Image (cartoon, rainbow, N blue to C red; front, top):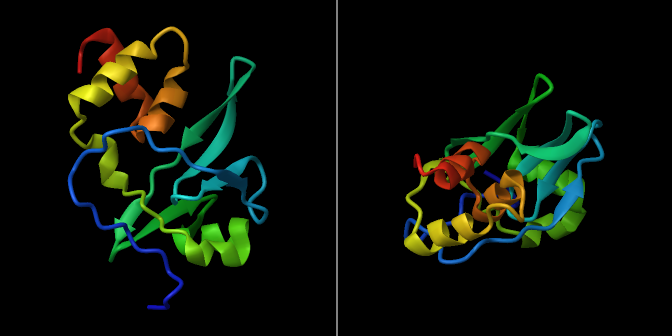
Length: 144
């Protein structure tokens, strides 16, 4: 394995105390609104009922690296980050783990998600806490 390949970050514990923030950049080799973040997440902008919103793509972890299937091709997170960020990608650590979508949330995180209801769209809250939109809606509906 090359030194430049992004590995999953080692976690000291299962949950996060505060929302994480990413910087997003377009993927120039992939048209139609694909973006990658500085922490190794990938999303595609879509339009539903005339409103544009991002949809996070599900990556799959294999041998410590996350891979994404996009438009019939498989890309490692290393390839995508290098495409978007160039040599700066070598300094970034791809800390996104697809399994984190189902991680156990802290009570603080649950409270913050509940307080965001009504003033922030579910997809933005999901992005902040690195969980699925559906899970945010379940918390808001009291079914989670």
